[in-house]
Image 1 (cartoon, rainbow, N blue to C red):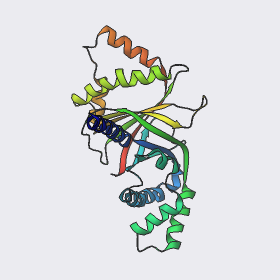
Image 2 (cartoon, rainbow, N blue to C red):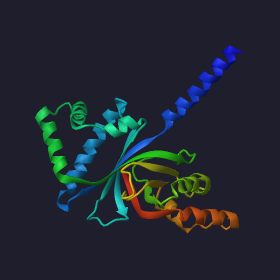
Image 3 (cartoon, one colour):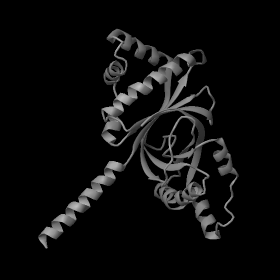
Image 4 (cartoon, rainbow, N blue to C red):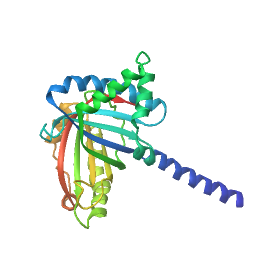
Length: 263
């Protein structure tokens, strides 16, 4: 009996640990580049893909995405969204400091000396401006086998839960909107959906509290999803949807195309 109880407890701890390991953490960086420096920055982000691949090989990150903004904000604000993926909140908060990035650059580009690596980073810092940085934890996602590759589309929907309705809004996303997006995916109208909670910045003055990511394989799938209307939705389902919508303020919707990816 004691052995059975021991194995039961160990199994529960293992499952709990496995779930914790599967939790995804992401840093979103919204980047502004001056028009006369766009070509230089495009070269730089291609270089960064190889650097972040070294970070992935070293198990410091679980992925890296570079998105080009299509719509949702004035290009005077920013033109790119860079997302770095982690499986640990401490690694997310610590990030990859400049000395570490320079070491990975030396590995990725062994023909460059220390002075050349330092020059690359100083030039990159001078041409990019991170207008906003969000630290986020994934709360829910759909079941799918969506293949992330350059050219796929995503809408990044920044939300702010209404005052006093934080839990109500999260429940609505997980229990009302997630099944709707899963149905879209099952019908071939979407590739992937995930719901994230902001870890930082916090407080009533923060611009957003949550973010949803809606992934599409191409523009055809995206526009088909926009045109689709579920005629079989019941009155109670519509009421639940409206209550969920009323529990948050949709701040911005950014449509972007994936240009570089590391997995």
